[in-house]
View 1 (cartoon, one colour):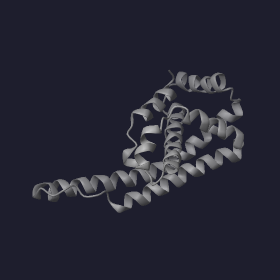
View 2 (cartoon, rainbow, N blue to C red):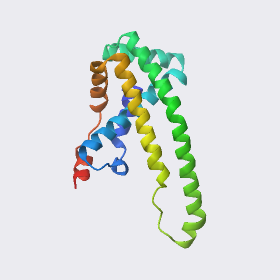
View 3 (cartoon, helix red, strand yellow):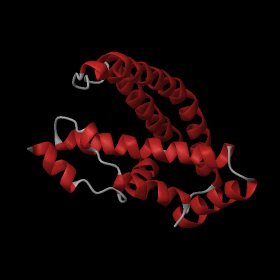
View 4 (cartoon, rainbow, N blue to C red):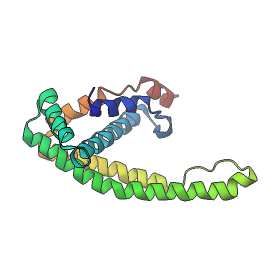
Length: 172
C-alpha cells in the first residue's frame, strides 16, 4: 500500500458525523473536497519534505499505477504546492480560534460546569474559505489537465471512500 493509499484509508476511519451537511449529495461533495485536501497535502509533502527517494517513488506511482505522463505529474505537483500555500493560512487561523475557544472554556466554562459551547462562528466562515480553495485547486487542475483527467483522478479518490452509512444518517 502506497503512502497515498494509506492516507485515503485513514479517510475511511474518520467519522464524517461532524462534517455532515444538509443532504446526502452535499455529503458526497464534502467527501470529495476532503479527499482532494488529503491528496494535495500528501502530494505536496512527498515533494517538499520527503527524502529524494520518496519523491521519485511518488512520481513512479503516478506514472506506473495511473499512467500519468510527466506533464500531468508536474501539474499535480505545482497545484499541490499552490494549494498547500493557500490553505496553510486558513488552517493557522482556525487553529488559533480553536485554541482561544479551548482556553476560554477551560478557564471560565469548565469551572462553572457549563456545557461545552458550540464551535465559534468564525470556523464556519474559514471552512467555507477552505472549501473554496479546494474547489479552486480542482478547477486549476481541470484547466491544466482537462476535465476527463480530473474526472479520472476524482474517481480514483472517491473509490476509497464509503459513504453509505454516513449518507443514511444524513438523510434521517
